[in-house]
Image (cartoon, rainbow, N blue to C red; front, side, top):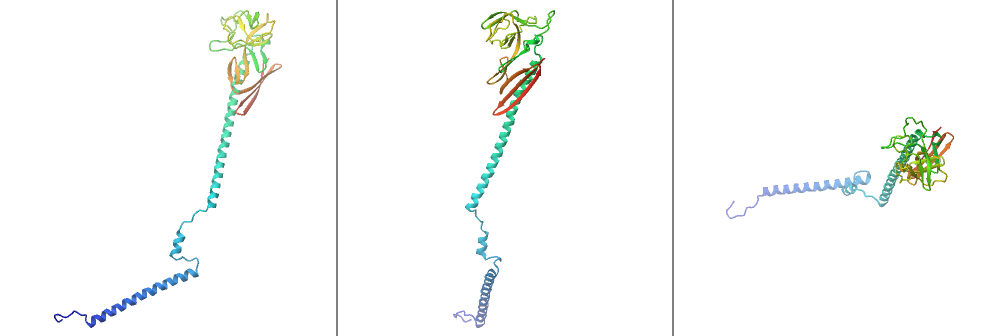
Length: 291
């Protein structure tokens, strides 16, 4: 190269460069033709076969999640409400059955307590007392001859040298009380008459007043008829039906008892008991031979 002259490429280098540019252009044209052919094939395939995979926009739309319509939502809520109501109904039914069983059990417990105590008192009926004064029946009341034992009283016992039957005799009478010849029937130095006990006489049965002082010969009672002098008198267990249950000697024995009826058929005492708890009722008929 001459000094001071520009550096121009030679003819060979220019020819080679033109050949390289021509090859690159042909390669780009081939890629464009190839891409156009592929797009045509995809479009043709989609049109000929609807079940074939779609183009990219269609594929993106198919991948989107489907929503819930208002009708479907309302149906789902209705089904859920029906299921909730059914579950609540089953629960309420179970509660009712459980309540009925519990109330029936309470009723039977009251009847059981009454019958067990009645049986025990009737077993000792008129023990060492006159046998013709065993029971007296009133309206929702029953008097069973006997002196029931308590924590501080052991009941009647056989007296030495004095055979039974034992009884007291009315020697005085006032409008509200009777005077007895004795309150110690078996002569064991323990009074056998107490407050709230029954008092069976030849003229009928009465209740000893709650204010009675044990050991006093004058026994206060209510509703005494005239002409009691000379009448025999014995202590008795007193059953009475009140608003809140069955009472024995002034103390409640069985709650929920609403019916207490006694009837004597010859030598058999029949007792009808009925109890109710929250609308659930139970009844029992009791028969006991009293001779």
